[in-house]
Image 1 (cartoon, one colour):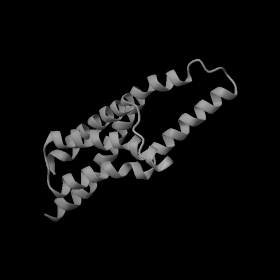
Image 2: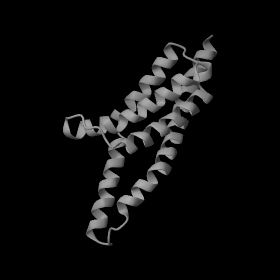
Image 3: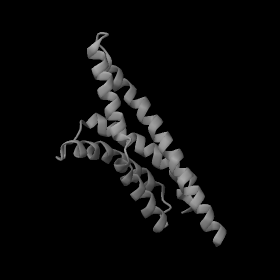
Amino acid sequence: MFWSTVGRFIVVPVALLIAAAVSGFVLLTLGLERITGALQGQRSGDDFLIVAYNLWGQGLLLATGLTLIPALFVVIVGEIARIRTLIYYVVGGGLALAAMPVLARMSESGNVVIPETTVLQFFATAGFAGGFVYWLIAGRNA
């Protein structure tokens, strides 16, 4: 009993980090087209630097600790309730990542601004992938 608890304390954070890396990779590859479209047509010079700086700032805003709360909530509830189903982690990961742009926009302006549907689709797809990877590593044995 003691060693299984210690093992969960090691497996869960490692699985969460790996799932976050997979989600980030999926989000980056899906969003690469959107980033390329935003940078296309910009001439070299000040306009390009401003657009690149704004994209970098938005990426850092999404990587803040506030946006990790929904994913941590899904993992904690799944671990405490010992939920082992694939659908919980896949849907939970999708919803947690789809909430990230909403939370990031809310912290900027104080109002709830719903981003474009394509942005929500990109984040939900990345969350589905991350939830699946987490379930493969740690969720099946919760």
